[in-house]
Length: 323
DNA sequence: GGCATTTGACCACC
DNA sequence: GGTGGTCAAATGCC
Image 1 (cartoon, rainbow, N blue to C red):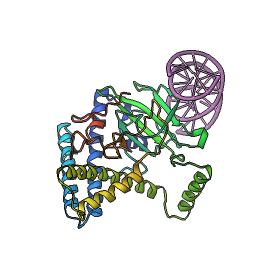
Image 2: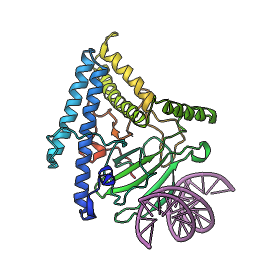
Image 3: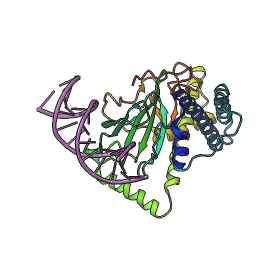
Image 4: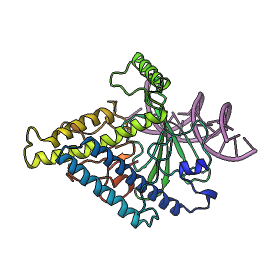
């Protein structure tokens, strides 16, 4: 029961593939709307009293939420008009999972998502196995961080195609945290970092859920920062900003926070994990990457618009990253 | 030759 | 015993 609700699997295995995909899409849309609501709350709290930035964030996020609701209506979801469901405990960016077997005790993903570009997440992975999973159409691929040996990084991920659509959707599940994610990595630093995390957990400062909530909060802030950053860029193109413009400073601050929170470490380019695209003109990374479940796309061609649609196979997106 | 991927085997969990 | 996760030898690519 717990496994079914946690992984979003219907009982009995009698559901057809198309129904399963439909359910997965509805679930993703519902979660998108739910995350948007949370992002809106965070944004309004962070930008309280900051005039134009606050109004802009509220307007954009309201439109995003409305778009999710419209899509849910189109999909015929019974929950389209209902408020978002409460968050599943112990799960990050939730998504449908095609696996029908109950999960093992030690196989609880710290995060999972559905994306058409499962490899482009800013980290460098090395495949170490592939397995056919019973009652599923597609095999599951197992990846671990390329720095597993070199730095003892325990991060792993599993990728499984969960829909044969165009583009195909992949369920990506992440396990363990990266301990290699410092630009100038040193074993002592990693050990100290791990020790500090243990310390904080032991002292009750950051329990597991607290860490996750903080992580999700950073994701929300980074998404907001990307939106505001794009808005700010567009604003700059149209008219030079006033030096004391509250919106500009708020956006800049948010962008700074986001870059600290969301920017992946610099790594060597590989086939699986290309280096982050950098907009030379702006001197800032162009985030084609869906950062932990929220897709924020390249705004250059559609300034001021949100491009959440791509990861969900909706019109208006396209990251051009073939699998 | 070095590195990443593939794939069958092994092992642990349920 | 069935299933899923990992290991490690074999293979392929650059």
